[in-house]
Image 1 (cartoon, rainbow over the protein chains, first blue to last red):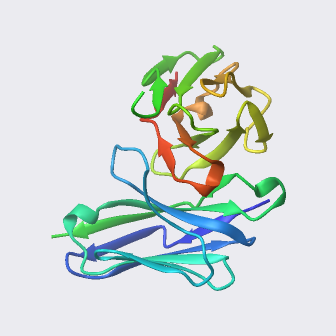
Image 2 (cartoon, each protein chain N blue to C red):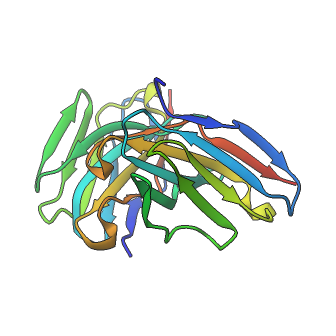
Length: 114
Length: 114
């Protein structure tokens, strides 16, 4: 079945440092989404990537979708304490029983030290 | 409603009892997802509905778990003969058009089996 792996599991940074989390799927994806979950909260949608090689930016956040549509990354420049939380990627299968199913990676827990 | 609503928000139950968790999705959303999140862990896929049909039930951990959706609206997740390992937060999400659009999460039901 479709599996989505995410690394690292934890990342501790000093405020102002950069942060990157990586996502890899065992199968080709039709799209990938990124979510952020603050401590004690529920996941909140950040962005969706659909096209091969797509790059999208949201202020200090840069999202990439691989050429083969099997991997993705989220990069945060100059982290701030407000960036604290768990970042999840979620992949949607390209066909078969995976189509329509949104499979989440394990998440990367980001802590930012002021 | 304005968002995805889950009830109850907290449930403490005795081992061996049955529980029902309810999810009211955003009106008009055709897709509905159930996930389980243990403390400090990622989102474990349980089941998703497209309309009232469940194309993929592969994530249900055992035959003690079942889910249904009626009227392309409310969904209930039932856990029979609860075990301590069922303790977790159960999250429901809905999206307008399956996994091609962003998923909106409810606040979750925190289930504690004692």
